[in-house]
Amino acid sequence: MLEIKNLVAGYGSIIALHELSLTVPAGRIVTLIGSNGAGKSTTLKALSGLIKPMAGTIFYQGQPIGGMPPHLLVRQGLAHVPEGRMIFRSLTVLENLLMGAYQVRDASAIRKELEFVYATFPRLKERASQMAGTLSGGEQQMLAMGRALMSRPKLLMLDEPSLGLAPMLVQSIFQKIVEINQERQLAILLVEQNANRALEIAHHGYVLETGRVILDGDSSSLRSNPQVRAAYLGGV
Picture 1: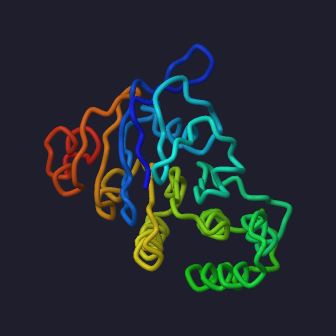
Picture 2 (picture 1 turned 120 degrees about the vertical axis):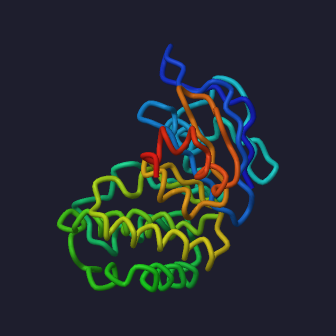
């Protein structure tokens, strides 16, 4: 589904990613873990066209997409749920969701996606006419994910979905990620500081440190790796 080879990216003269390589197979959950400043969010920004790669290649379904503008990437089936949710606070829940489908021209397809989102996040249906800015943090995260699903993605990129949420809500959000992956066979690239939770649901993981992949493997092997346990799992 997605293959990154020797990606170099950053901001101005600051290089945040140093020849990063990773793959996301179709229908699988892959997680990027690492400390603040490791390059996790920068990776997603490069993939979604928010910053242009300085070097390296990005292949999506076998086609190069490096440097392609965001709206064309959305049309190709990539959806990015950014850190901090970035919902439209002055619009209703329903209006936010419909914004996610702004490039979908088939009205019946939009209705079908809306039904799926409401079935996945029943709270959004209850709050459909409510202003998005008045939702709780957990509800806003559901809305941001639902808005991305409305674009009918083939690859869903999630940036810190548990950020700022209470533990019970974190568990619920991660359960929803698994449900979406299983029901839609949707490839998911998950950036998450809660490494233990991320590795519990992911099939494969990459550990980033100062813009470089220092370890990767299936999630169970990473969870049992002493280096990963000491640095990211609190020694659990």
